[in-house]
Amino acid sequence: MPTIFHQTRFMTLRCKAAALTVGVCLFSMFSSPVHAQDYPTQSIRMIVPFGPGTSTDTVARVMANAMSESLGQSIIVENKAGAGGTIGTEQVARSPADGYTILMGTVGTHAINKTLYKKLGYDPIKDFVPIGLVGQTPTLLIVKADSPFQSLEDLAVAASKPGGISFGSAGNGTSGHLAGELLKARLGGEMTHVPYKEGGMAVTDVISGQTQFMFYHPAATLPHIKSGKLRALGVSSATRSTSTPETPTIAEQIDGEFDLVAWFMIYAPASTPAPAVNALQKALHTALSTQAVKTKLSSQGVEQRDLATTDLNKFSQDEIVKWAELVKQSGAQID
Image (cartoon, rainbow, N blue to C red; front, side, top):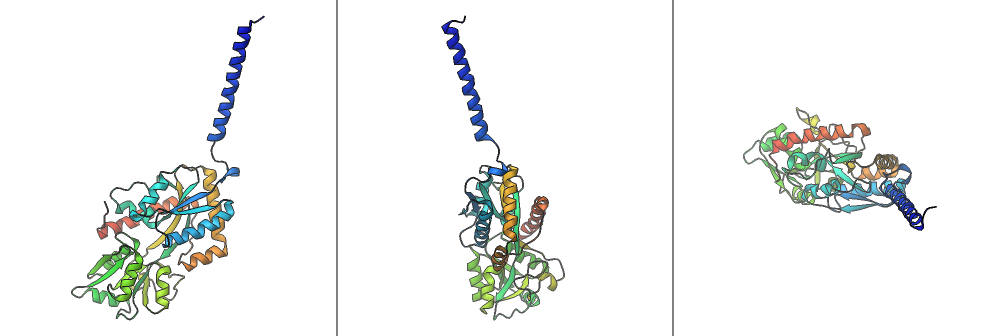
């Protein structure tokens, strides 16, 4: 018969084994991967790497509200602006890959910045998994309504004269700046770039005649066009914009290719579990299919574009290559 000592020792070992089993179960429960049936269980943050009221912010809030309905959890938009969108974008890249922090990325954060910044704190391909393309927006080439410029040919003639002309943008390396540089390469002549701290200031100076033209998105320019303060001479996309179908494309008017559009894509940190990615993609697809979202995006000049999820990385890589050429051509560089 075992002694009391041996009985006690046996019971102690059995208790330790039981405790270890419970510990393993608890560890497994709290460290298990995200499952489709239980994601999401809490609110999700959507980081916007630009300030409130910007086109990216407006698009993000439309999508956050619509996707929340499908997911059954709120998506809270947080603005983390600064350094051309790199601050907020890097924050998402370094966030836990659990599906609860996502990003409204843009052509700037995930294509242009790759070449524009000497030291970029994130890799736009390796550090993210794309959820889906929200849409794209062409920019309008605008001039003052009562200016003598009635066509691109008029701009080319003015640029060929001593002193040339000037064009504004929302800043060095922005899509508007690079579109202006491409136009300069296509038309020739002297076109001096004038960067502004934000696009609204640049639009104001086109209206006042301080600069001769600029490329900017329809949401900010159409109200001024309708009020008679600005005139649109062309659209930067390969096809005419649904917002201004009467405005010819740049490509229609010049001898050479011209196809530049800004775009918005939702991303999650790399290694985000597949069930979370799938749930977010489903919610995005559902949102983009509703008429209410289509109408709201259209009012911002955002045009939907069908792109399979399997093509998203190739799309991003192709965009990096395309914009890299323009960044190098412009000479723009940010340390």
